[in-house]
Length: 508
Image 1 (tube, rainbow, N blue to C red):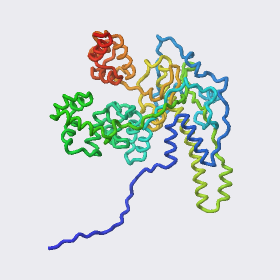
Image 2: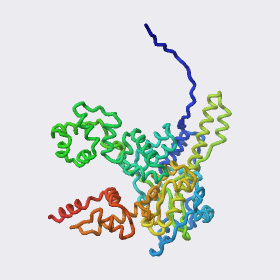
Image 3: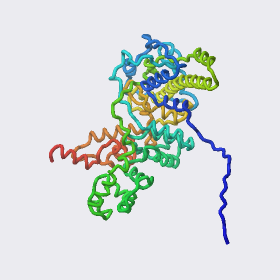
Image 4: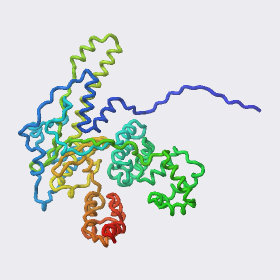
């Protein structure tokens, strides 16, 4: 009995939805990410490459009769510290808050250089005369943008993309994301299971391991879960045991090598050989390795916020941005003189791209204003009294308030700075987590923990249980593990370590 395998070639038509990022889409995302320095350079580069874009003159400087300059904002914001002004937010999430809607913004527009989204891009590469580096802060050179573009062109669902984009812009300097899945879910109005799925996907983007909670999780992912590292046979059993045991990983992180040798049942030399393999370049020491900033860059605040007649006023600082216009006559002339269909297509595409550039810059500026106005309508108490009065605020709150996508808000608040009566802050600083039912925020809890530790006896410092008890007396109900989490996040040692450090300082 014989059998034969019949091989045939067939053609099948399959309809598959797929998003491909066009040049225009990429440009729009890039503009959302850029501060005013970077945006100016990007537009100047586009103008140099596109003959249908033209930069006009600077336009007017800030009018002398502008109601309040940023320098005056701090003085005008001085109020009675004993008075707490209640913050009222419109329940209709499709509109801006009633506080902002009722304010006479048109009057401010007419008496200031704020164009509320209209495109102004500086013609000169020179910094303005009144530029002051004292009003700048270092800019973060982040690998987040690289992750953003990878996420945007992937085939995952929009809900997963939104979560991953949020994660990408909330990684720490080493590429870790210590926030729990539950905390992230609250911020973006999702659920912990979906967040966990998004984190798992994010780890596989380049660079590998971004989104891991900590170093042990990163090691486990690189050497066990991802499978991209070929582990020598002699290390295989020890590596698998090591990365599947939390206590052993903790011993490794703390460099307790004698205990680790005992746990693994190997000699000190065998452990040394295994660690040398880990350090041989088969994996990066942490996800963001190699993406670090080599030089310090500076950013000027993109907007100014101050109080006027008891209400927040947003001023978009556009002095560095001149006006960009379309050269329509040149387009029509070139189109008329085109010799063939290919040239006509090329000319139309260039002109279409020029239109898109101007529209994208306008949309970026307008959205920046809307996002800032929404943030500070919620955080008006901060403008009046300082960061102790920050209110819980999530990306979802702002997204609903202005009718924009969460991913758009997340991108726009990253790397954009506001000059306020209390200093310069990145916009994402104002997204504050709630840590208990009494509306205590994470920033307020951190401040209280620091205050308690600063006032403790150095011979007998407070334990995490002690701190939780003191907080409870002040009406802040949090668990001991919550105190430990925030203390660790602020790099404050345990009580016994603080006591040992003090004894070392005084020579005991």
